[in-house]
Length: 412
Image (cartoon, helix red, strand yellow):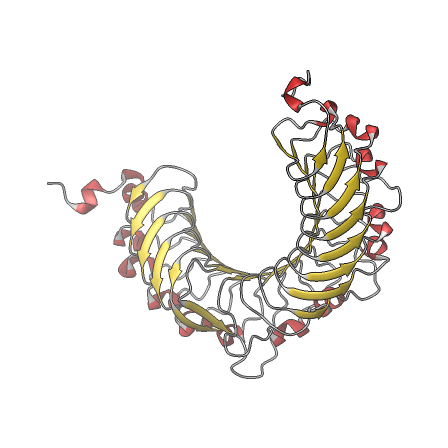
């Protein structure tokens, strides 16, 4: 049988003879096998990317940890496993470190990152880490800009509140999802109070409590994405009076937020594209200022306590493609407003108290692929021209007339 080294992918073996090589990028191929210890011979290497291959096994302590000049290490999207070697802390020049989408296990040692003060980017998502990780490891990192950590199990915890500390970094991206963050207190990380250059924040699936952290928007005027879904935020969904021109997405799905949406929300988010406020306890009507969100592509207000007519004022949402308003207390007939959404693909208004006939103007909604209207009180004939191209559910209403199968609509 061939030895392990002889069976290893030839490119990884033979590149080690280039002792003065500074950049080695093998991203996006079909290399397999493990990284050989002889990788340590590339003592001049500053950037190593093996991302998006089929490499496996553990990381070679004898080789990888010798690359003292390494500034970029990208091993993402492979099949690497076992624990992270503690000797990686020797790579003091490392600025970019991404091992996401692998099968690493065990604890993430706090000492590992504590000594890597040059780091700017850390990607640890989608592995099998366990145990408790303290964010105090980053207390002395002045260059850190991006941290991404999405856990795939319930055995990993992140604690940010062991001690009072003020960070010396200014992050741009923070993703900490499904990390059992601050499991005992349920607190939003206090160090975020000192961040004012954030562009993306994802703290979803952590069971965080307290009030909605509106100050994230106030402190970070360039914030583009705020994702807080599946936590336990309570009290009012309050937004400070400000024009957030950089914000493209707000997602607070599955919390315990209450109160009414502010009447001028459309003035506050003129360029927003994605709003998900579903599965909360919000009430009142849909503010007419939503019509000012000219770039809006998805609006999900489902599973709340909204009431009244869906859209009481005419306006255009020329780019909206998904509109989910199900499981509320909307009443009254459909208006002509929906017919003015020319790109609408998905419409769900099921489980409300709506009634009346379908307006003829909705015949023009030729882009619809999915229409769900079940469990309302609509009546009269259902217009054949409105039948979507993929999915239709109008069950539990009071429609009458000839059955839809007699329609000549080409979408049927």
